[in-house]
Length: 279
Length: 302
Image (tube, rainbow over all chains, first blue to last red; front, side):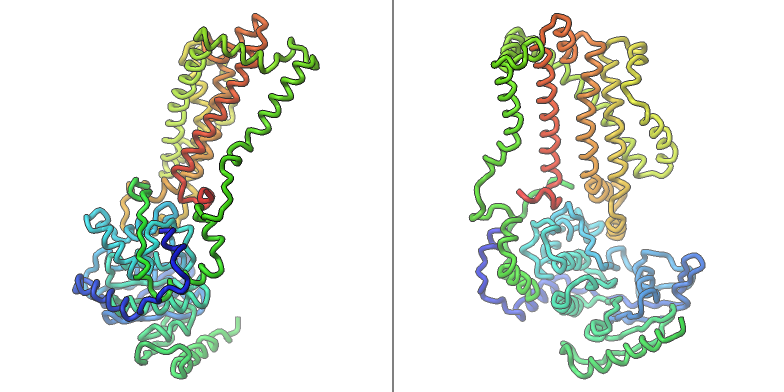
């Protein structure tokens, strides 16, 4: 494969993008039905670490298949909310209910760090995402499919250490996708990437979300990213939902368009007003 | 890490790469190509130097032997103080013919490996247990740290009283010597495995066994190898001292016996054999390291 990489001519015929999308749609259709989003209802959710109350009563309903972005200044509790939804921490009070009882592999998280096992090849890292089904006969085939879906089919035999930051994050995405989750929580997954890689990753996220139809919850500090990707942006302030903005723009959204900029400005204004409070 | 993980699965899917990765690959091919092929090793333009590379470490030892030979031949060093390398080689040849050399090396090697297996095994087990379980660590770590600070060679008088000059005395000392480096480094390795990876493993539903096999053990491996190499050094040191003081066979015994009869060439021969055996053990552990840590960036140069 290294040969294939090295000797691929620089001016190689670019693959038709629409073709890939169609191909992955086709792959998806085979397993359609299991990959539907789950709705999510949160009531009176509170979380305190000792005396420090991070979340002070969150009430929220997310319909199945919605793409929700959660923004807020650092320390506002947005990551805590995500960890509670993903079941990584237990709430102090309140409840989180899914539309139906999810299985373990129905809710997946993607973190800011790729968290790949450095001693496992890329494909094995993706297989980890299958959870209990890891030992099933088609595990490898499913992992390969997930890798192809994120555009890294040719990197299956590599060690994670030779991949770039963006590629590592795409492997992490493949790992999260391979079990076909119904809720996918993103904790600033693109925070550590450079601007260009970030944009292509955002497009990838949007594409897999549209293909698979899971409920997506994206925590980010980048308001532009939130309005570009999400159906709905939640602004969290002091442990509460301060604003709930519906982004009703057709997809694919053109970056830098006036509508997006206006929405971004509005949300940013709100966030900045909050910061003018006396310290 | 399972065997399957380490098998290369290399096949190109270049046509299915999406726009994002095409951008990335293209930029790599333009700007970072020399770097990439360096990392992947077998670049066609890379200078072929491995043979010369392999010889470089031996230049200094060979030069020392050469200077030594010259000093002896010219009479600068009297042969009563230090016999010439050729004399040492001759003594070695004689002992080899009589079968004494092979027998003594074999006895020492056997003691070293059995002692190492026992001590290393117990140290590894304690390292795992104390890294995994807080209770076990609380219960035993303080005791082990106290015992660790006793130089194990200080126990020789006691060990002779307990075991006589039997095999068990030497095995006990070697086992005790290698126990601590293996224990400490295994424990350290397990404690320093990235907690984010452990959390990731739990999220993806790994059982305790799987978590250990796929995350904790491979993560601790580099540190365990450091312990292994320390332990190998201590293993030879302990064995030689034990054999010099109380033994009726083995390399240390051979050296002491030769001293009694003023056979300096045999004494020097034994010392050289120690050096070679030590180097051999170190190379073996390095080879093992390279084999099991091929994922590690430090081992991907060649």
